[in-house]
Amino acid sequence: MLLIFPSIEIRRGQCVQLVHGDPGSENLYSIDPVKMAILWRGENAKTLHIVDVDGVKTGTVHNWDTIENIVKAVDIPIQVGGGLRTYEDIKSLIEKGVYRIVIGTIAVQDKDLVEKLIQDFGARKIAISIEAHDGKIRTDGGKKVHDISPLTFVLQMKKLGVSRIMYSEFAPDGVTKISNPESLKELATRSGVRITAQGGIKGYRDLLRLQEIEKFGVDSVIVGKALYENKFPCQTLWRLNEKELTDLGPTRRI
Image (tube, rainbow, N blue to C red; front, side):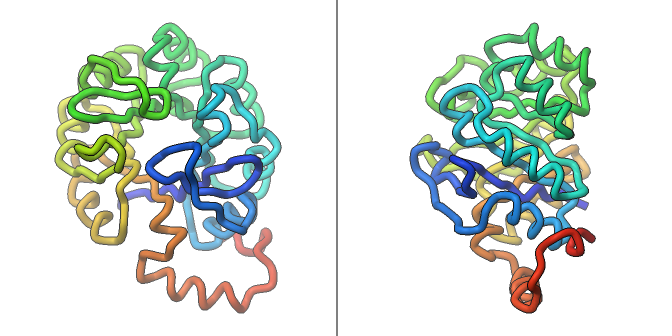
C-alpha cells in the first residue's frame, strides 16, 4: 500500500502551501501547524512531512518551536526538510525527536557531509530530495541547475549509503511540478533506491497511477495542496465528522 505523507509547510509559525514551490508565494491556511498535524493524525496519517519554508530561503532552521511541538503532539514519525545545511541543525532536530531529515542543496554541495550523516545517524534517518527538470537536477529552491542527471546523482548518493530519495519533477515550463510515474519507475528500477514521489498530486487518480508502480520501489508520496483543498472523495466524510468534534487533541490519535 502506497504510504501518504501529508505535507505541512511552515512560514513564520503559520501553515502555508507554496505556489509552484516559491517561498515568496504561498497560500495561507488559518489552522496552525500543530493543529494541522493533529488533524492529519486524526485522519489516520501514518507519518508527516514538515517543511521549514523560512529555512529554504536562509539555509538554517527557523521554526524550531513549532517543529518540536508537532513532534510532541502526535505519535507518528515526522520527517523535516527545508534549508537544512549544517550538521549541527540536523543533529539537533534528531535529538528533538524528528525521525528523518530531508536534505537537498547541501547533498549536491557537500558529499562528505552526507556520508558523515549516514555514518552517525544511519540511512533511515537521512533522505535526499531531488528536483529535476529537463534531465538535470536543480537546487536552491529550483534556482540553480546542475549538469548531472537525477539517476547519476542518485547512484552517487547510493554509494554513500543513502537508501531513500524524495523526487519531484518540473514540467517543461520549469515552474509547475508534475507527477511523472514513468520517470519515477525508471529512477527506482535503475538505482535500486526507495523513492518517495513529491509534487504534482491533484487527486486520487494520480495516487492510483503511483500505486501501479509501487512494486518497483516507488513506495510513498508527499501530498500537500490537494489534501488541503479536499480533492479526495473520502475527505467529505472526514469533514462531516470533524464538525461534530470539539477537541482535536490526543483523543484523536488513532
